[in-house]
Image (cartoon, rainbow, N blue to C red; front, side):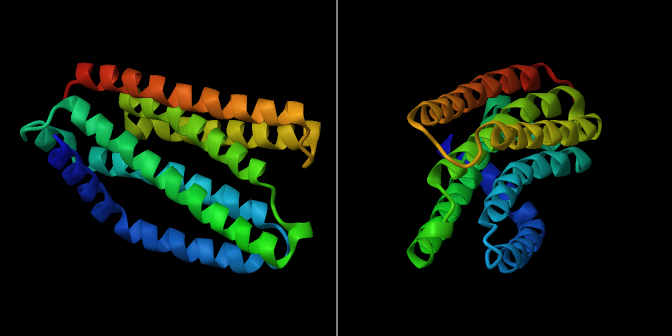
Length: 208
């Protein structure tokens, strides 16, 4: 099973390679523009968005290529196919958070007063994971074409939630707010796990 999962993820990574190069270039440009302006938060936000979009894009590419019909003739289960997407999402999110942490650490070393607090990275990462948790079942239920508009609506909702957070609490974090952030992270992880089981159920019932 591990070999099949790694093979499915390798297929997705190879398909996403052209898009990944474009996103890396965009990330470098955003970094050059926003970090010297003291607005590293935008860079962290874009990293999380990229991490959420890549797995969704791989699912869209599978739909366009009718990959699922071929994949189901291979010695893999429908659960394996869904699992590979969720594992790839976790990998991308971990990479985005690690890169954000490295950037934040370097900025803290160079300019401690202008450094982005770690809680912001945790908050944005949690909201991004929650975004993926909501979108995956929609993609498996309605397909990439119909779910495309829902994707942008959900992205707008997540953006509004983030803006609303800053409008209410600002950038300072007290002990109580830190608890809320940890609760947000826990809810996002729980939603992502529940989303996986929902997506497996939907994909097992889907006809091709």
